[in-house]
Image (cartoon, rainbow, N blue to C red; front, top):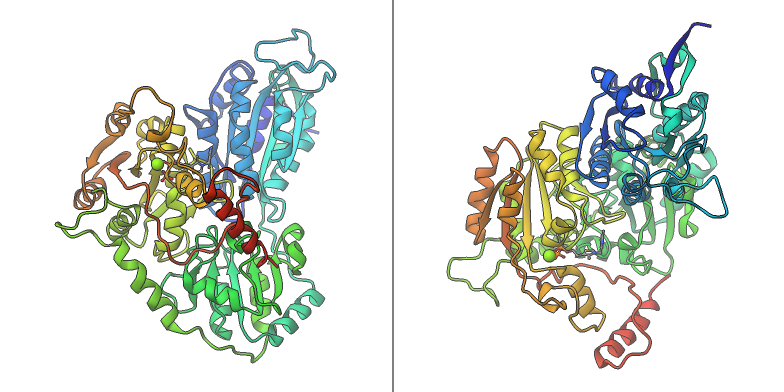
Length: 611
Ligand SMILES: Cc1ncc(C[n+]2csc(CCOP(=O)(O)OP(=O)(O)O)c2C)c(N)n1
Ligand SMILES: [Mg+2]
């Protein structure tokens, strides 16, 4: 056996660089790294010598780097991913939130946190979390519940099995998610004689699981027996590359399609069968169809509460549920009839097996009425129109961004007011035009995520919609984007705090408290200047005092070569009232506040709709 003597870190890097997808690209497009104790000597040295085959990117915060990696994978429809390495201790645990984000959204990312000495000689080392009762525990055990595959590398040769398992997990459509290889720092530096064959290029083909024939037959019978079916398109439609197959299927049988946050843009917004956003942040066309549907066919959706209106949306008492999903876990949720398979092949099989059935196409008035109601909300206010407090609304901001966008624009977001408003209002012309991290809805995903999207698809314009709260939560990757020359447009809507949670608080009968900055126990009023703050990191930054100025700024942004930030003050109170379905948020059973008691009564009443 021909062998090559390398350290374990050198071997890991060499192996990673040799893993390909079935489109001829390296599966791991690069490794984000912040070095410190526990990875600088081992991984750092290995990455330095491997730069031609595996790029290293330096960020400013481990969580932010991981967000960029995850957004890269999501925008690449999981065809490509990135790795992130950190020092031991705080560098590592900074990535745990991002690991959870990737886990919830079923997105691949390779985490390589440094770990304590396997030989335990110098214990306790700097940043070591000592467990009094278990010598095998380190800070990295926090990754276990948020990793699809976890291993601690305590001997070099463990990589011979751990790395293939890691890639098998990241490239498996059902198991796909974050992988953590906690890498003991002494082991990183240790040499071993590796079989040369370990480093040969390896292609990971996308597995397209065909449906079991009897599951398919049962689903076909159920669809044939239905009168009012509806398709709920989830993120799996995108990850499987099934948008065209979905369109063919929907058109052949005239079945309406509704879209979850992750599914949005599967069909063009103006396709007659695309009834648009569904659920809590959904619109009237989709939600009214879903309320009456006697058959709900979920495709690549994990049916989270925002999609199902906390399971109160699909309220037809005769309603059947089919879940076409590559993961068994999702395929059987809520008593669904499972069709466990890849979305693309499953939809194609359904199309060819269903025969001649055809349903009544949805009434186009549903959509025209909806747009007649909400389009005016997105229009620029006329010069003399004054808002209740003189501030533009988030809907008007969305309208301005939409008007400045082209077919290749990707709008992205994760938390705050904007995800709900964009789900309802954004008109996505084609797959990939809408990138929403709404599985974990993690504040702070946005700027780093926008950077990852642009790295995945440099030819598309990326617009990051960002609340002032999310900006304050995590903005340091803006400096990274500046330094890497990554052109993204960031629209900061400054409504003086946590606007959406303030509204949720009011909606559940609560007093306005501790969400907007004006309602917090602060001694000095906020004077945060987002323009100066972002400019100090090197971004081009402007303030827009009105929607008209925002429109001008968005034009200016087109000529920018790096990040371009537009800050606009918005009204924290309005949100689009129409369309959205009830969301279950537990309201206190006992309160001194009459509004809370009333909200509790409404809550109990709404609970009765859940089936
Ligand atoms: C890391 C994290 N912490 C807390 C939350 C809960 N949360 C969701 S939205 C939000 C407020 C967002 O404020 P901002 O970004 O300003 O958006 P706005 O609603 O004001 O438009 C909070 C606190 C979260 N989603 N993520
Ligand atoms: Mg805000």
